[in-house]
Length: 307
Image 1 (cartoon, rainbow, N blue to C red):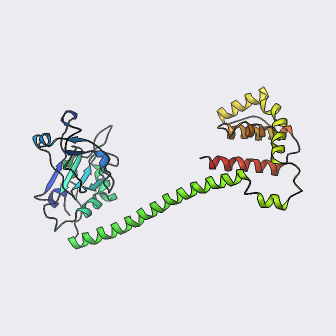
Image 2: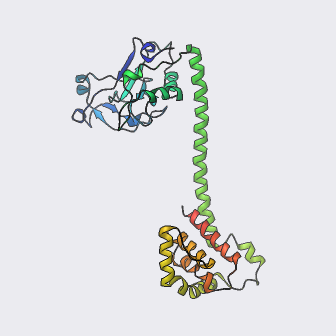
Image 3: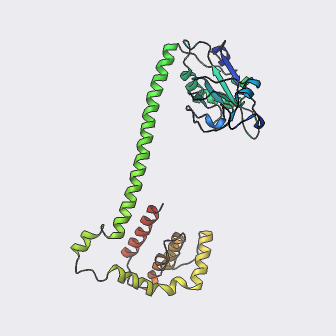
């Protein structure tokens, strides 16, 4: 078993630098890395703060080097670590980031150290030593107390190689999912366009030519002419408001209950036509259960497509 101080004997194990706002210079040449730049196993490169070289030297800042292990001593998550990449400009970091740089890289793989710090076992030990009431943190002193096993260098290399392989496969899977989401969105738009233009029902209309009793426009006109009174009645509106507010209703009539369910579903709105469609349940007794289910299915489909 070893500890970080024992591991980097002769190297660097220090906190970042205490750089106040007055010390910063947006036109400076030295990058000031923040907690937001430290990802869980990867460098985020998010911040955009700088100071000039003269100030950095005056404050005796620790300049970072590629493959330094950077550990965030504050959430989230607490104790996350990443490797310092090769950046264009000289860089230092803030005091809440711990810098680990082994003295002899031939004995230690910095990637292995980073992965082990990010492991559940090491994170659990960090959590046990955290302090603070509002924002949790791990001090460098407590970080230095954590013991962990140290495999031979060749074993470290094999572990890192396997982890990199698995993470690459995971990244590829995430990229494929993102591409699939884009395709799905395009498909949704295409499906909605086809539905509106009548492409989806073209074969059915051709097969049932002469059997259709009314056109879509005639159906719409019938809905608008028959639905108004019931949906606009003051008593139903009052009950509907109670239902929408509490999610409950004491209405016994199944048709009225269905009507209120519709109102609840449509309050975000697909327009007056759909709201008046609800009134068809009682305003026109010729509507059957199959037609009602079809209307609900269409509403649900449009709701999902509109997301």
